[in-house]
Image 1 (cartoon, one colour):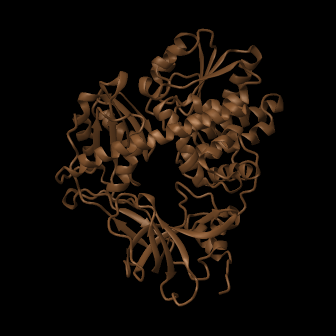
Image 2 (cartoon, helix red, strand yellow; image 1 turned 180 degrees about the vertical axis):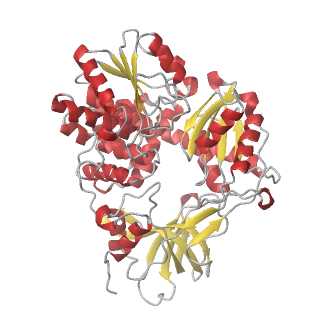
Image 3 (cartoon, helix red, strand yellow; image 1 turned 90 degrees about the vertical axis):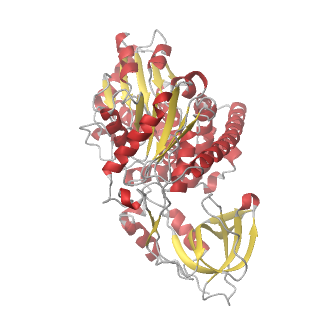
Length: 589
């Protein structure tokens, strides 16, 4: 069969995502089209840093304990350590919680003259006030949504602060930090930050952008594409390179999925179970022995995280499955036995399984009287805004909160758990975003979120090939807000076997094309929502899948990744609602 790899399919995929194919297919510019000058507070921040350089002020960077925060800290340390006496501090997740808290402010050394926050600070009123009382200047760089009142920082750089005209609102914390260095270079030249330094930090910006799951608007896609291109050329941060070795990632073929599923989780594991400072040291190191040691440590932490997460998921599912039906649209579960560093991942899993927003809480260690939680939302319901409304209606209920539309973190006294559960569900019921892609239905309909699964339609036989898989990969990066193409076809199972973990490996033929020799290798990783046995040889199925490339011993073959398997024939291809039954929230604690 003659293979055809004309660009029509790629152009259609890009157009369906609101992108201009002629513009999007060439992402080979060094910098994104948006310069740093449009960000509110940027010039003032640069002038403040230049003053600190002239006076050689002792400076502290206060970061966050996730991938975005670690990369942002490493970016500023890389950019400033040759011109300033600078060090970094990151909160202890279990003891201090998120951001520049009062306890973190107390740890700032006495001789400090300047504090720069990265990936946090926009809600750190108390901590910043403490620093100001000591006469310390504070520059906040952040990307989280601002609250109703401005923190008492001297300067704020945040694309999401009120009045900021910078259009790329989805820039992550590491991206904002990188833009700060770019602005420093633009004003002070190479003597402050060199062009080569800016270029060398793009791999960290790319990883943070993908791992933090910010929407991949055009500006972010250019940033990620440049970071990936540099890594594929062998121009990679030494610490990141060491982590890639331990994660089994070949730098020549790295993709954005490797950031999200292999590298990001290893860095995050340190912040979840130990301390993210190890990850920052790794990204700053040039010593091969230290890099190997710290990479191995992160690999071990990630394995422990998986084990802890599995135990918590099992407990949480038992709680949910033991309950009767309810009109509550939002999951809220918690336990004294759970690890607060992993609750965000479990919330994501519950959201995916039950197709509704989920909050998961833990209270352990020195904060055993405090419920520390993470929430994950469905499209159409803005999580941080919902928490802000709860906070306004019930002053004192929530101690601290912050986040985005799809993810948020919060804490409150443990005895307020049921009060919070009732308050957040009341807000969800009232807001009832029927207009969105994922409507929260009225009480008479069970208050269910109905997810819309969008497919890009079927592929023809002459499009289902390795060259098309390569073309789709090169048309990326794909990710949050710019989803990787999802296709749907009818297949006949020509061979099947189970892999470790009960996952499937299938040999498929397109329905109507089984007499030829064309076969497609497919893998299907079960996500916990699916039941049933592996399909037998000769079974006709309808599969939703993404194109992939299997690399083994220098050889590349097409391997599709099945995301959903259904009987064939199935419902009409297009937007396909998927919903789950209503359920009862537990009165935990």
